[in-house]
Image 1: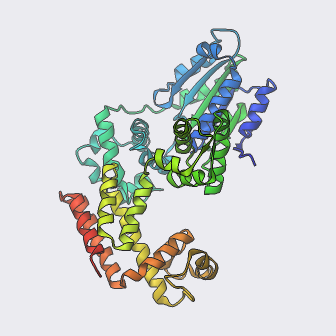
Image 2: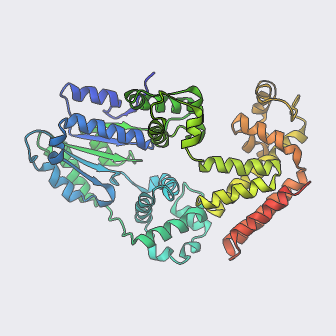
Image 3: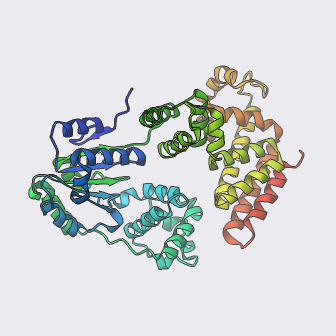
Length: 464
């Protein structure tokens, strides 16, 4: 079953747009947006190639810029100027900021957090856009100035973001932009937007086309409606569910593997999914490495994946929480060191530890409540799913303490219930109080974060 992109406005799926172009029908403007960056970029490449099939023509009639450098006046001039060579002219603005607004601040924060480590340049650009939308100044946030923004002020600035974890990303974003000498993003004026709308409505020579891409858009903006009226709008939402993600990766990897005479065994697919979560970008990048590593071998096996694909941060987080639940000090210290070496902020590590301890306490409360008829710490996962887990769902809303754990994946619930027997309720409650004190020390004192976390791990993992 092929995966289709959602259609919006007068747009359609990517397949439908490509079919239109194959029939010779092209519209003045295309907007591609969504969080699935790899699929979006693939769609952009395919539409661009369909509009200008000859690679030599693309060298002179294809113009690309990024949103952080976009100038609406120059963009309009380019759109109304005929191409250098006969044929189509295509102007592409990647990651345009024309559809940004204060209504999208929460999603902008998510992108900043996600990109700080793997893509600092994009994270810095996003943060400067964040400052523009909120009216804050970079200089006011430097040298600890960001600490002056209390919770109430933050909620006024970003109503849709609680701000509880801003200490983990905000200072890093400020330091990143300051070190790069980032400059503020100039807001697009209403006059400039009006001119672009007029150009799209009929001011472009036939054969000129505009392609815009964006991670998110405010659909209420008048420009969005103008683009919808003049062209096609395609959305590329995140694929949810591991099975659908795996299907998407397999479909996009099919051409690469077939062209090289390779295939992945079922065990190799399982190993790849465990390490990449079937993220399109990561998975396809690793598949290219695996193809090169396999040499003359036609079948790529799980052992090849283990040899080529390194340990992920997610795997190391799992190692840490697993070691905590098992009360294994050596394993916990080793996993914490790996996370710090990978650049994980101490506050992020603390958040993962706190979540694990909270789940264990919730599991203990569930066990003590007597509601888990037939549960045994020795039972296998399949039996738990069939006989115990169904009885938890109807009562998930009876107490605040139960909601957080019971709403998790059944395997998470199963593991927490199995491991809770290693702790007493008073121990777990005491650990949470200790975590509150450590969190306060991390945010308000100059104590060494690593030492504070090591002391906590020692307290949890000592013999009960």
